[in-house]
Image: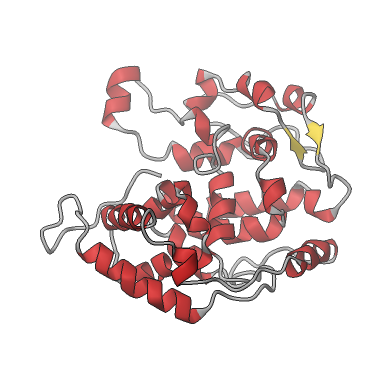
Length: 305
């Protein structure tokens, strides 16, 4: 199985798509080879905030190792809800910074390729075995869009589903794989009351399986074409200062807690009345949404991560 890089610098870096591509070999994607770490680090670029504490590589690597250790006896999908809020609180990025794919390329290939293989090569699929003889990690888990790349998807899930400083909704959202696989692709999820309303339906047990979450996401997205959620359920006015202060505080912050949830930026929470309004609306949409295989008492089926 792919192992921890044999060379890890002190600082995180950026790896361009073109440079990342040369390391996406069949050996790596099948978990049979390691990434040539020294060669890879020669093709990186420094982060814009290279000299800051949040650019240190050690805390991210330690977090990933803790995730693999804690969930070694569980399905690797279980690590998502634990790792997502802690990764977000460790990196402390702005959305502009997080939109740069080069950061995630480096995390996937230069910092923790062993995690990517562990997490996304966890359950071989028969079709893959029949066609190639070996299961593979999709290359997009190392170098891909934000809703697919192994670390970007977790960071963005934490960013879009947190309620101000509260990461509890992130844990709920990441506990259902379809919220990662489908909801992260939807533009409407950037409306905070929408995100919180969808999480609320999972938390209260209205939506349970991945199939149901997929149906909910499809219904919410379709309804957004005719109903402007930001008008009927307005969000609080966003103030960028708490985020910047939270990022600055990284210089003196301790490592994120492993047992308790960390705290995010002290931004204002989503207005409860807006969430309640959308919860009622989404519950009605879900009640009429087609759910594949739903017969009234269906066994939950977990989706591929």
